[in-house]
Length: 199
Image (cartoon, rainbow, N blue to C red; front, side, top):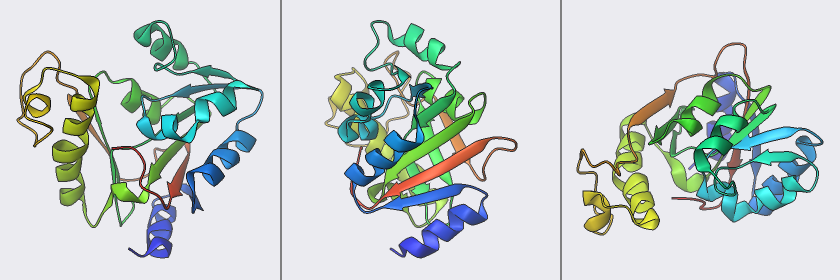
């Protein structure tokens, strides 16, 4: 994997890009960048493992559905935050981002309405092309997430084997968002971490 080439691909697609060798270094960077303001999180194991909620909560108002008393209320309130921080389910070597969402809060927050969006992910989520990225998102990341949540979807009940394209009410892969380029008039920064993070 050629990190320099990947960074340049995201820059070509109009994103600001930061690269870090460790999650700790990336967390320190975001802790410095987001200060005395409001920030919302997408539902993300990556951000959780980075300890970002604890860091940013010391000097910001943080809306994180994982830590809110009511997931949906916290997610809605977070739509008004100045900053939005989330991970992605997959990325391509040529600078495309992919998110698969069950509720819509993560995809919605990444598209519009915030002063700046940070998209944070580890190199384990990078695949050579879009086809392989979508396959990984649907057949690896989503089933593992359903299993982790204890949902009664076919993928979870079969040990996170693959996507069954089910119609379960527990289904978490309802909307697929592909960021081919940075959204117009939105400030967006890709934060790449050279570690395996998230699912």
